[in-house]
Image (cartoon, rainbow, N blue to C red; front, side, top):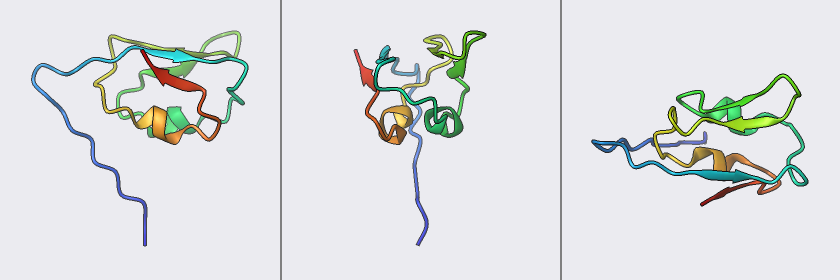
Length: 73
């Protein structure tokens, strides 16, 4: 059996803002690999950043984080 995820888009998209806890984040990139819109990326200081403008509100990033470092605001 495989992992199945469904991304639900609304019109207009429901936006979420997230908080990234740098103390919990282990820079594994799980959230980045699952984000369908590249709303998460590592900046030049190798810290995880979130782009509200690119987010579609699927919240896959929250579910993918093994350390629960991403929280919805």
